[in-house]
Image 1 (cartoon, one colour):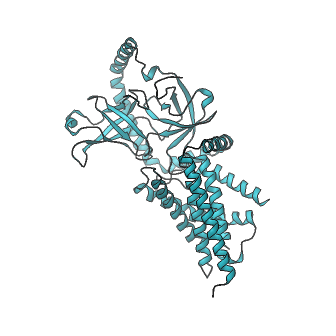
Image 2 (cartoon, chains in turn green, red; image 1 turned 90 degrees about the vertical axis):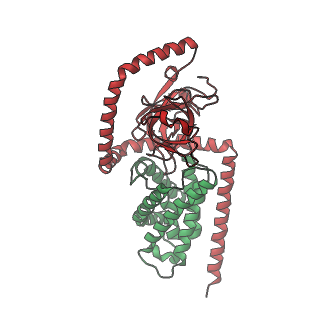
Image 3 (tube, helix red, strand yellow; image 1 turned 30 degrees about the vertical axis):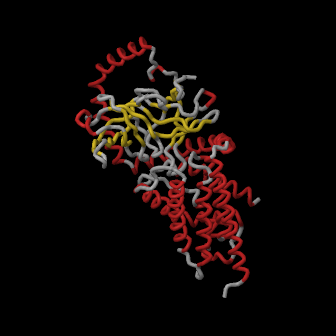
Length: 167
Length: 285
């Protein structure tokens, strides 16, 4: 049942990304709904589940794009791990923590992707436009992270008590 | 004090991350080595996903159009102004152009040269754009079932749009000429000088930064048209209009020129495009 729920959420996110978010121009860039999958999983269930959710979501994206296969999976599993580790490392839970984690995680994910893509030979990514993309993706992730965390809890059940910041 | 359970969990999550990173790097390597399985998987995923995405796009179109119209109003006004200027200019040139094209077609036919206007083509609808910020692609609603193949040029009536980079039975993906990874051999219409242009990103102009010697600067005019060069082993047939020169400057080495070129085709508002059935070896099948 959990796998079915996760599949439905991921597929819905991909369809929404393709039909809506990728078509909306925000200051010359597009929001990235799929990066919320590892962020929400990391916030709700920690680094291990965050990285696994990121890997699966990244592979799903990699199947639908023409950029090097595996690059998005690599970036998103790092995002999930990083966000989960950040959430775990914070001793006192706070309502703004998920927002900060989403902002930082999304910015890191986009920057990491561009850097890794450049290393493997993609051209023209490290320029001023990248900062705009990072800004748009990070802000939209921060705005949408709380509903995404609720959705992650619906998929996986209640979060572990260690990740209280997600409440 | 750190509990042993927490240390164990941290170690396990690091181990999981390591495994996932290694798996990602492995599939990346397989992709770079040209493993056919990756293309097959992508083809299958596209076949399954495309109908869902197309349906959702149709439903969401009024909303996305309204959003882009509202938040891009200034750009639309500028675009409108630019298009009015273009129409006036084109109306002035039309009569002369029609006669020149007719003469050129006759000469080409006499010499047995196939011009791109005479190539067989497939008219297709643009059904989607890029999924992510780092692709500069469009999706077409026709694929290999209609004779479209990888590498084929894609044009509108105005000029070159891009080339097909992935194809399934009923769908094609086109890399736009503005993609930073896109390179193309070009020819200047007046001087006939050839060079190499590449994209610099969505909405940004092309740049010609190799091949144009600095000593022909006086022969290049702003708004001069550049076309595909069609030189030996070119990935495009010759003479497809690409763009207009908007800026001319000397390169850092002062030996060559750097030209900034605005694409002739309006890449932000594509609805129908034509795929030229032309292969890199010059065949049309």
